[in-house]
Length: 429
Image 1 (tube, rainbow, N blue to C red):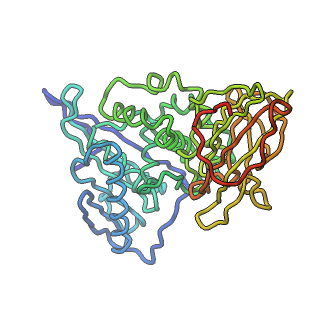
Image 2 (cartoon, helix red, strand yellow):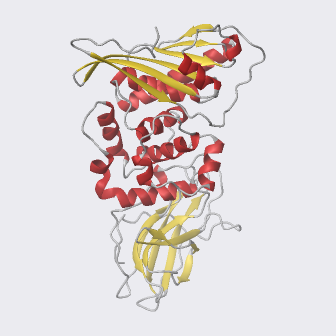
């Protein structure tokens, strides 16, 4: 059956054809292929794969596809509908003439992929859909396209461009019970070296053909942030389901009051993006109340080792000096030696601060277990255990940090270096 053929009109239903392209110029992770093979069919519970890959590689591909399908169907809360048919090609020369759809063959020739989909609708309701994947046999393209096929056959829709392609990229990177970044290294290198693409430009993109892997990278980063950040994840899944089920939903209506916060956290994510980076552990605390220390009383905050910047609850000014004392112990891995807030000799594990104001951050500055500091700017003080941004997850321990204005009241005591569990909110000592 040709999925590019013009649909036949029916009195009670209409057929709609959707073409979902893959990035045409993405760097590829090549699968070793010792010698040409004739195309062979391989089946699993939810997939029928026509491929010239050797049997072992074909079964490995089926396992990856099934695992990914289980994760995305669980996330969206809908089991897959029907068998997903895939043409996964390593060498076009071994495929007989006419065995591949021309559009699919053209994309494979570019070492990319495309999903061709037909849907039968009654009014606004999809009553049947069939999607066929055509993908070059690299590491990620078949999985990317299989996400499109799942959405097409299960929902009859894939959502707006930024969501459709961003979630398809997420599909090839998802790991079970692991919220860390697992994208290709060239994606990390590109994003870290590029001028960040604005949130508004990503959301307003309308093109559905001729896209590049660079555009896919920005869409993936936005979807990864929204799906994993604790501030936005609860709204992101219903938003996506609304797109897929044809409801009248939009990013602006869902996140309008939070747009400035999302833009800030998106830029922060792009700046620190790396393999293993955990968006959930670096989610910003927008609800914490801040105040200036006064009357000689200290404000106390709880700073854990396995998170990013955490709100101290203290408003500071560069015109004033502040005393601090950090009591407790933490460690930079499960097997590392415990350290105080002074950290190790190389500075790792040291308590450090940053000032937040008007969605901008000052340069980070070192603190420690005990001492005084003059902040570099006016604003809200955030604290953290200094560590590589993509290595926070295995940190352990907590500090009880007390801060007061220097010269007021009784001096702070040197820390005991035993773990304390103060209240989450800043309180007068």
